[in-house]
Image 1 (cartoon, rainbow, N blue to C red):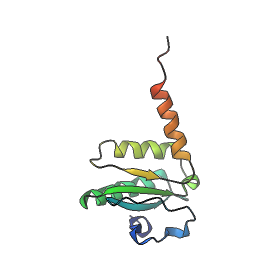
Image 2 (image 1 turned 120 degrees about the horizontal axis):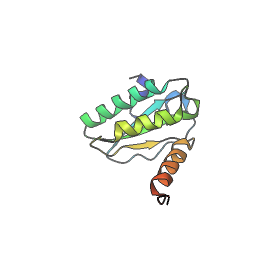
Image 3 (image 1 turned 45 degrees about the vertical axis):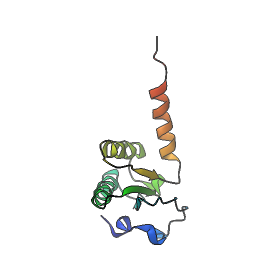
Image 4 (image 1 turned 30 degrees about the vertical axis):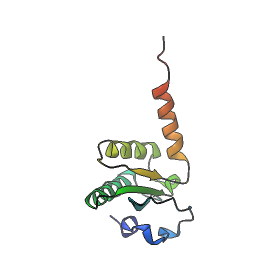
Length: 120
């Protein structure tokens, strides 16, 4: 895991000089900023898996902050699906935050597809 990703932002620092606003941090959360700019989905997913393992070892709920998601070198959809697979069986609450809106749009489409009435 890169030093930037591993940094716990309880001190309020901004990793990589990101200008994205800081998400709210709950008292039981451990925040991980994961840089996406110029990286592959696999690299980001490796950092996500390491962050989740560390948060679980510390008995804290992870808050994953995906920085510069729109500048990922791979498919954003593949990354979000990969994160979904990783957290599906995770024993704690996982929060994911990013400023671009891509994740919210993806999840809205998935939710709409799951709640659509069956075709006759």
